[in-house]
Length: 240
Image 1: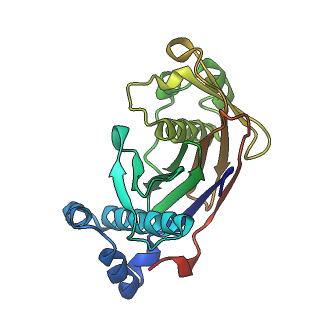
Image 2: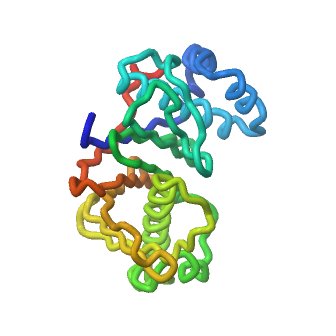
């Protein structure tokens, strides 16, 4: 899948409503993953974790042409998931929120994905200047209709970018500045102040797979070839 970036999403109801699929999914978890699964207090968090693991297992396995449990998983910088073996140019990333899980895969490029919940607790307009560049804040226009969705779109793009880079929360989000165009892939990034001079050769895509969620994907394009990015539902027959 050289040059291509694809993201899939699925709802935890896939496992929640099917006891047999849920049991098969748990069989794919490694002992440490199963222990982590058991430590979650709430069923929603537990199922999002399990679904993310089995989605990645299936999707990476398909891309490598190996069984879902035949490749090794490790966590890199700031918890970014990586493929420990076999040796491969493939990269992947995971995100989840409010019952929706997304997994992105790309070859020979860094990739990141984020999912945000449009029904999350109310956002205080005062946070906009803290997390957004002046240009973004002007586009959000806090207090005007739809401002919260505009803020969440910028937030989701920033999180997808940070996850692709394997960066932590020490980065000043207001120093990352996005310009949104009319289409879902018409997104450009720029960097200010502490991040001035950072590579801007990145491709992005934003989607709203349902009324509740926003999904954003980031993919490096430092080779000068911005990839086409697809965001689509996970086929049911790919799950356990």
